[in-house]
Structures are given as C-alpha cells and as structure tokens.
Length: 387
Ligand code: XIL
Image (cartoon, rainbow, N blue to C red; front, side):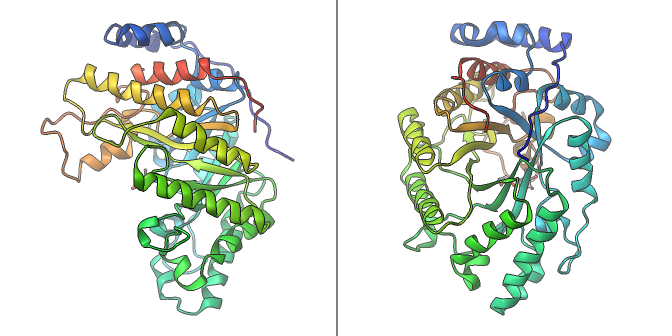
C-alpha cells in the first residue's frame, strides 16, 4: 500500500493573523503583492501545499513533543509531515555496540505523527557523519556489510509501513575527495567500495517495500563550480543506480540556503538540474530548507526581507518542476533551529548579538516575511500529481 495523505482542517490563528499583517508592513510592495492576502487569511502551509499536490513538513525533536506545547500546536497547524531532526540517526540512537539502539525518542516522533495524521519521513539510515564509533573498528569487509544490513533491517524494519520516504544514504557525494566518480570516500566506501550504496538501497527496499528511497544531498542548489561538480557527480550516481537496477525513487535536495554572502542563485540552472533528475524517472524532495542570515546586516527588517527573498526565489524556481513533490523546512520556528543553536557555540560573523532568523516563524512563534514567501510560492506553484 502506498502512503495516503492525511487531510487535516486548518485552524485560524488570530495571533498569527496580526503578526503576519504587521510583518508585512515592514516588507516591500512586491512581498505584499505576492502573498499578503494569504498570510492575512492565515491559511496553513500544509493546506496551501496540499492544494498543489505538495507535502509541506518540518523537523521535530522528541523533547519538543514532550516539552513545548505551543510549538507543537504550531506544528500541528502548519505541517503535513514531520521528520526527526536527530533521533533516527544511527550514532544518536546507538548505545555503544552493534544492534543496541534506544528507539524511545524516535518512537515518540513516530507516535506523534501517527496520532496527528502526519506523514512521517525517515532521516536517515546511513550517514558518514553520524556513524557509531565501534563501526570504525570493523576492519573486515564481511563484518561491515553485516553491520550495515543489520542496522537498516532493524531501523527500517521497526517503522515498516509507516515511513513515506527514507533518506537511505545521506550525503554520499564529495568531489573534493578526488575520486573520478565524485563519491565521498568516508567510512562505508573505504572498505565496501561504491557498492555499499547498492547494498544499502537493496536492503532498504527489501525491508520496507512501500517507502520511497531517497538519495539526500547538500550544496547542489547554487551557481558555483564546486556545487556544479556535486550536481554532476550526483547525476552520475543516479544514472548508475538506475542502470544497475539499484532501487531509488527520489532525490533529496537539502537546500540549506544563505541570505547574503553565499554563491549566486540561478533559477534556470536549478530548473535544468531538477529536470535532469526528473528525466531519470525520479521525483524530488526539498528536504532541509532553511536560510541562514549570518552574513546579513543586523537590522531585523532587512534580514527578514533578505531571508524571505531567498525562500521565494528558490521555491518559485524549484516548484516550477512538477517532479518536486515535497518541501520540508529544517524547523518551523527560530526557537528551534540548528543555525541558531550553532551560533551559541561557534563564532558568529556578525558582531551584534542578535540571533539568526532562518525559519518561517520567529522565536515567539509569530509568522515572519519568510512565511509569506513560502505561502506565496505554494500558492503560485503549478498543480502536480502527488508523489
Ligand atoms: C543537524 C541537526 O539539525 C543538528 O541538531 C545536529 O547537531 C547536526 O545535524 N544535514 C543533515 C541533517 O542531513 O541531519 C543535519 O541536521 C543538518 C545538515
């Protein structure tokens, strides 16, 4: 059985009505034209998305479910999908030895999704960056293969039939590692070779045949030589997987964007890349969208405008491609954002002490111009078949 989209009625939120209206006063006429009325009517993002055949969702953390009721209400109102920000990552759930995983936090998220009729995304089965330390001590090829298979069977098996899409391998590309195929050399590839990808995707398909299997990658959105190299390598990998019959259904475009100081954005280039993916018979999911304003000026109105423009430009181009079926923001409110958290332990570029504002709602759960930009992009998006 393929996944059915749950339908939930949107809730009119008066606080947001006022907040969005006020936020709009600070934005430019173009913003007002594009989406002011949408925000004023307080139409939930998931509803605007669903009308176009899109799923909109957000990350969530188990401790937010148990400890932040107002945020949870906002998630229920806006999102049609949730994904665990960290709880399903191997290293995060593992207690220190093979097969010994603590599923309680991941279960909290899966149960929240089920209780609220939300689509559940799986992130992720393998990621070089979040692999338990004991795995690095396995020198034998057979042992490593066994560990990969066991983990995928255990994790994907536990949530079998409940996961819409699995990021099977997260971030497999790194042209800087110097291989002709552009694959990242870290962890799995070192001993298992590029076939680790085939092993992972076949095991995932066998374990949960209804889940869409995704290759999730970052820094493939912008007009920069190193991103072009990543795009080329990713397309090569997908072509190879298609040719060899390795099961893959979708590409996850992370889309951690930058409001200022980053590489330029080119709408035609992004459209072409997404069309290349679609031509391989694959769908596209925007999986981790957010916009850092770390390098933008300090004034809140200026930053919010730049962040909103970045969302709008990216989504307007991306949603032109009918193979794009899903948009997930990496959080919903600046209250819970990895960008804002990161600033607490890393040097900031700006010298002011104002925290970043990367997400559609601010830390007080009020809608920002970024909300209007996303809502407007959904409203203007061409209709597509859900997928
Ligand atoms: C991030 C989380 O948001 C942080 O809380 C954590 O400390 C590190 O991972 N690409 C991914 C996500 O695929 O899993 C990352 O999430 C962000 C970058």
